[in-house]
Length: 291
Image (cartoon, rainbow, N blue to C red; front, side):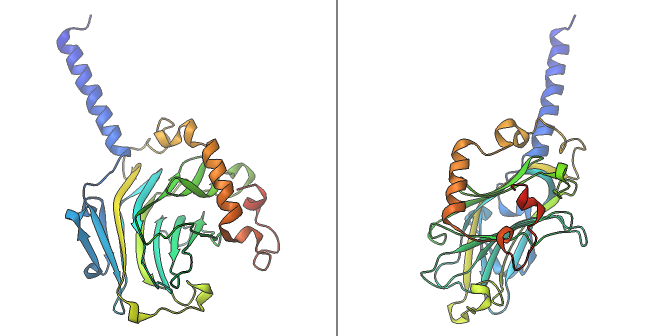
């Protein structure tokens, strides 16, 4: 028969285990430097509001970048970003996950391609799985992302990868390993962001060059949110079907998300590698599989 004292001890043990598990899958930094580090040009990244927000700067001297201190295997990553206003042609603001492995790279990309004033901002997504990329899709955003912060999210679980703009899914890549289509699931990935010049390709295929008289170019970030299995971390975390992002509600798009996704695909997609016959005379297998 369990005594009150032993019951208390058992409860405390349970609580400590629960907290340990919770901390292993949840990381919401109070400040930028709690969960991230500057990887490129510290002088061009400025902390705001006690480190709860940051400003990225691109000028003729340098761009800049940062990365998470940990890597993660499955989960959800999101940031609120306010992009470069005005004439941002030739710039790229990137938010992505990367395994940081040379030959067999896994990577999930958001790349925001700068524009001439008055033109829509384009977001390019790309997916590398087992070292193979070149899966670009481009979407013209239906709002001005430089006027205010918007939330950009990557959801990554055993079932699919979904790129969200606010609550709108703009791309879905399903796990079709059963059809021998590569899917990133073995390598943990870090969270990265960079602001840099790429006027050889970023705006209208490189036709529009960067106008340095408009520099410095400024992008703002806040509300960094990483919820996933850190590596190194608990060995069984990534395989735990009890993680919230593996739940039934996250194994496919719900009805509202599916309607929004169809709306984006019909009205705002301006490029899809799946339909580019000049690059792929034979349709890539993941496109045929309905990814």
